[in-house]
Every structure is written in structure tokens, then in C-alpha cells.
Length: 455
Image 1 (cartoon, one colour):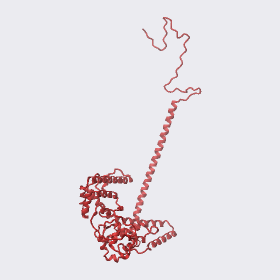
Image 2: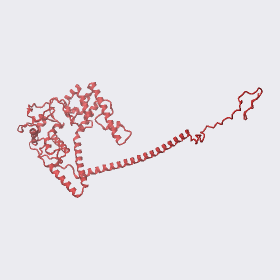
Image 3: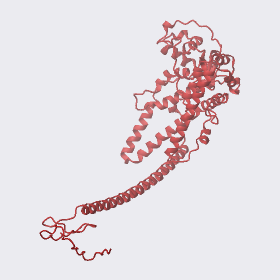
Image 4: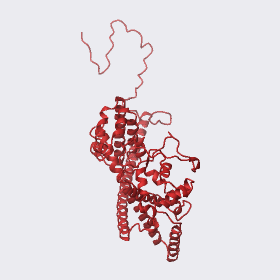
């Protein structure tokens, strides 16, 4: 499907004249003469990651929409303006119930994922009282006001967000690469400061030697020129350079047979040129720089060939480019090692920014250390209180044990009476016969201290 080939870094992702009936000029190719294995018809081609933070959600939405016959038919007749204006998004109301249900489910999963990301971010700075609804506004690829159902507005927002983000993708990559190079230089200079004069001179000499060795490479052809394409034709495709034909070349390198050369297919054409300059086995060759070189080559060719700026090269655009003077007599191509990637002022500003970040991290570390010491102090205080309580409990248990088992004398007698107990004295023994009945008429005298009962 056409929009699958557009997904990686295209201006219009979901859309793209997906099933456009644009036909290439028929070309007969004897592929037995071509090196390597060609693309098998019907074979699924994995699209590279777009680099967007919602890449998986985007792909899943495309997969689901592809299953609806009505939507697929509308895409066949849609043009770029209809898609970008949001007209195509309104067709979502006519898709099947099953498709809408699945899209609803995908949106709920995406909203849940974003909320988890927000919570994790806030937890990392120990923030509380998170307003998820307010924070969701920063994500422009879905309608956060309706987190439960996938509506035409969601499709429209997804298309516009992907379009905008991908248009800025290359710019962001260039900025990150520039920071990477400045960081390398900053770290190199900081390392030199730690060395004595003799070692510093050796390191400087080694650095200059590696730069010279890296720059000593074969000539790099101008990307997109006849010489560059013929080299690919001969060395990669294994064909006779005298039989170079632009139409055949286009067909050979349209890997997914969609009648376009997309950005990834173009970048693959520059591998031979890049191998002249970069070798992963060489210490002096930086593979990050190689990918930046590849990106710049692709951008240059797109700017020269892609007339309608849709980030795709048609056969017509390709053939028209081969008729230009620049195709036959191009200017020399300057590789990264021949360019000034940043100025001293830019480096100083970058180092100043790093210094500020280091100061902030140092202050944060000091605050964390103070918090750690305070927590340790509180811990020690609690431990001391715990020990005091344990001692009191131990003393109380010992006292209870003593009360339950009072100390005894040498003969085993108690040295003191437990509270509430009194020693009972033995009663005097009765004389013999004392328990005999009294004679008639004899009244026993009452015991002293008792009340007498009178008749």
C-alpha cells in the first residue's frame, strides 16, 4: 500500500495518495544480471521507525484503517490537499462499526500510555497533584477532551501532527548532531587540561594525525549525479556502466515497486560513497558522522529532484533531473571533514550551558545530601526512642515476673505476703470430748465480741 511506503518520514503519513494509480513507464530488465537478491513481489517490507513518540499508535491506526474497504476506496481518489484540509478525515464516519470500535480501543490505550508517561515524569521530580487532563494538552496527535472514542477530529489531528513533526525531524537531527560534535570537542579539551605539557602535545599530535588519516579517502561523487549513480549501477547492481539507463536504474531501486523513490530508498543509494569515507573498523571514523553525511546527501537530492516537495521522487521527476547540467557536470561535494561544523563562539555558548547544567546538578546533589543527612538524623532519633521504649517494656516485664513469683526464705517460706493475702492462724485444739453434746439446760457462752440474741 502506498501509505505504508510513506510512513517512515513522509510529509503526509496516513494519506499519501496511497493507492494512487500512477503508473511508471514499463521497463524490461534482465534481473539475472543484477547482483544480489531482488525484492520479492508481495513480500512485506518493514518500515523504519519514524522517530515520533507516537510511532506505534500511528502504525496501528493505519493498520486498522487499511481493513475498511470504503476508506481504502476514498484514499484512491484523494489528493494531498483533501487530506491536509481534513476532508478525508470526515470519511471516518462511514467506516464499519468494527473498525470504529477498534480505533476507540487504540485511542484509549494511547491516552493511558500518555498518562503513565506524565505520571512517571512527575514522580521523577517528586511533584504531587497531577492534572492529567491539563498535561495531555501538550500532545497534539489526539483529541484529549474525548479520551474514549476515536473521532474524525482525531484522524485530522494525527495527520497534521505527523506532518508537522516529520517536517521538523531532519532539522532536529541536525541540531542534535551539532551538539554531539561540540560535546566531543568539549570533552577532548577538558581531558587535555588534566595532562602535563608533554602528554598534552602527544595527544594533540595524535588528534591531528587521525584527522589527516580520516580525510585521506577517494573522491566522493556529488550525490545524485550521473557519476554517482553509474557507480551504484556498476558496483552495487553489477551492470555494465556503458549501458547505464536512468529508467532502468529507477525501476531497480524502487524496492517496494510503488513507483516512487522514498527517502529510505534514496539513502540506500549513497552507501558506496559513504564507504569511501567511513569504516567502522577505523578509530578515526565516527559512524554518527556517517549517518549525518547520509542525511545531508538525501536532503540535497530531494531539494534538487523533488519538484512538488512531497518527499517522494516520481519517475518523471527523476528523469527530468537527469536532463539538468548539474547531473552531468556537478560541483564537487564537500564531506563533513571539509566543513566547519560550529564556531568558537557557538562552542563557548554550549560550554556555558553545560556549566550551568552542572551547577544545577551540583546544587541538586547538595540538596539531596542534606535531605539524606536529615533523614539519617531522624532515623537515629527514632532508633534511640525505640531502644528507650524497649528498655521500659523490659523493666515492666521483669517487675511483673517478680510479682508473680515472690522470693522465698531458706526453708522455702515467703519473705513477704503478696498483696491481698493474710496468714491464717491455727485454731486452738478442742479438749477431749469437746465435740460432745451439751447437757440439757446448759447454754454455751457466746464468744467475745459477738452480739447476743435475746428472745
